[in-house]
Image 1 (spheres, rainbow, N blue to C red):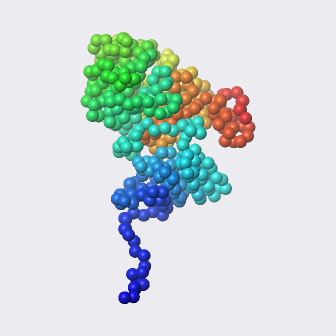
Image 2 (image 1 turned 90 degrees about the vertical axis):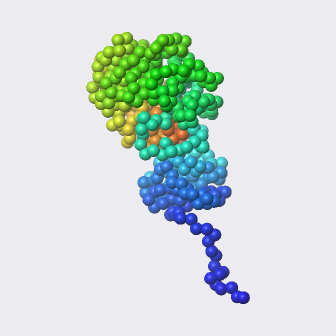
Image 3 (image 1 turned 180 degrees about the vertical axis):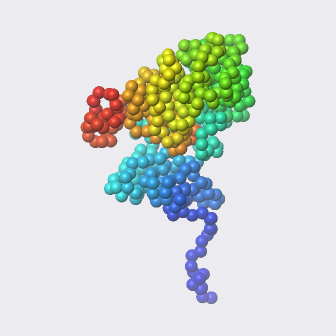
Length: 478
């Protein structure tokens, strides 16, 4: 029998309720990226029909999309002229790349997925390092991709549901990262590879963690009052501690003989340590309101408690309050600098400041520039630089002598809280996020100069040098 024209027409094998103006298909034909006119990005599993919404979106329609040859990395460009790099398996943004002055017209990922090429109407083609080993800031993962990403999708930073727990060993050689399953990962600070992992908190996330100064013992806290001292090299519990819910990072004196712990709404407990073990029962101090952050001065004589009333300054010997720092009502995070001369604090209003520990008056103006709440501040060991992190996903550096920003903001996972910490030698800055992504920034001026010369392809002008390295003698390496 003759076949009708209708029967000869191709028919769809399956119809899926998803669409987008821009699409990209993974090489294994299993995942389809969908970019919407509203800037949204979704990932469609072609086998199951499951659609996963990505953790971020463009400020404008998606105009270009591409997936790497291994299917693990996707890249989209939007009308906002920004390029977002995605982890396909987790549907989360790894980082946002900005640099074009015109609309992006093309994206191409190298076969090894280590390099991205982007073209735009501004007449430029930009080459981006996706692998991260050719940057001043080297990215690395601090959480397995298989972990649950529910908390990393939260649209705001909740310090009492903190999913950002880490500690840098006093010698700077190991970064310990607390995981949601109660384990602690030990990451080599040089290779950025995981050395080992051990279970610390039973059946609950790691909530607080700190190394004991001068040693290698690690204090770990979790839910339901769990607090213990571990030997992380052996993954062995050494001493369990009883005393409240340690949701705040434990604070120490520089010699490691005094430790302060507390949880949300709890009293502050002051522990005496000997050979990294507690001696007797802890002393108790009740702050005016529930504490947000604790810090002990290096000499162990002064305790700073950041709470709803501001920063309370407490005499450790008598446990009596000395003063409340003026203008600190919105401060949630405060810590003494390594030399004990200042107290650095970050405000929910988006600024950081230093107070003199001699006069307890502001020693700097309010250092601002972030578009979100400041989540932490860290002072370099030599006291010259202040690093601030924010919920906008960036880290900023300030020269404390001039109180001016140093260079452009250092990028990180977009719209995720960042906590920076300097290495003991001051050569590097770790920037940790709760999105399972971290960066190690080389902040040595010589490295910045060489990198800038390499990008510029010529000798830097004095103006360019001063923008990046203020108060440094003009000596470009090219």
